[in-house]
Length: 110
Image (cartoon, rainbow, N blue to C red; front, side, top):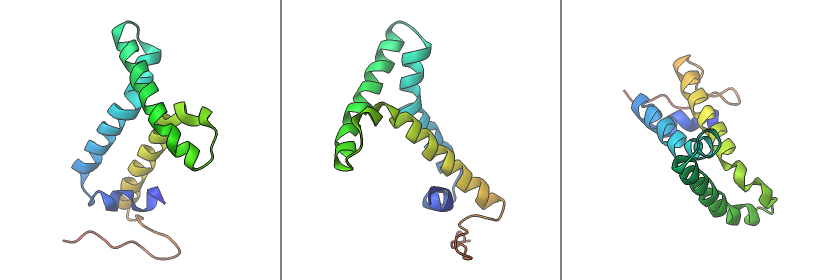
């Protein structure tokens, strides 16, 4: 689903794709990388940000009756979503974007 329509939701814009990937990396991937790979204040801030995002994810997990131990895995979910968004753009550029059940999503307006 994501790989089929994410690039269309970005308006088929390369700049929107670049911004989305950069902000997803900064928001979801930087905190665990900092918490694990460095030391000192950067690791502390990375760990605090990772903990904060995990805690804010708990209500959603409860709503869907998922194990709360999945909360720290939110960055992995964000990585998957980001990869699917990039795959959506690549599929579009290869002329195969939005294909599902023999139909193609509408092309961008010229």
